[in-house]
Length: 144
Image 1 (cartoon, rainbow, N blue to C red):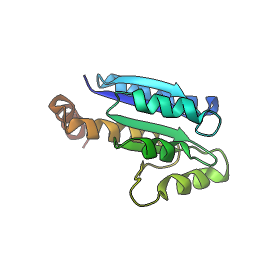
Image 2 (image 1 turned 90 degrees about the horizontal axis):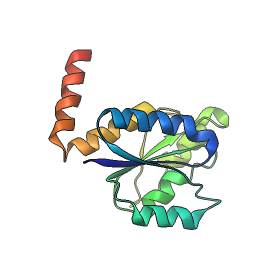
Image 3 (image 1 turned 45 degrees about the vertical axis):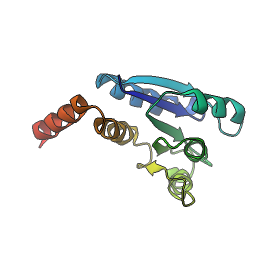
């Protein structure tokens, strides 16, 4: 069964994270969901990433938005960053997530765009799971 992990940096990010989990589950994707701050509990985050069997990570973060990059630095599995509008209309978080150093990529979606993050995760998993690809193609045809 395909598996994803959704990690949010704080309780204030929970709505975006839970919405992503709901969409992923609607595709039959098993999800781990965690609230772990990269700043306040880095050891817990390291442990979670090291032990996770997720094939893709979605990380929601605002303000300094370090969470997606920290996760990406701990794994070679894909990480999708969702910048959250906490200050400055989310532009600060967007720039923090998108400006990763060479060799530590994070796919980045628009500010508060949990839906595109979840769909991108499904597309990544569809490379391995043909049933996901078929469903995505069917939905795109139906919506065009």
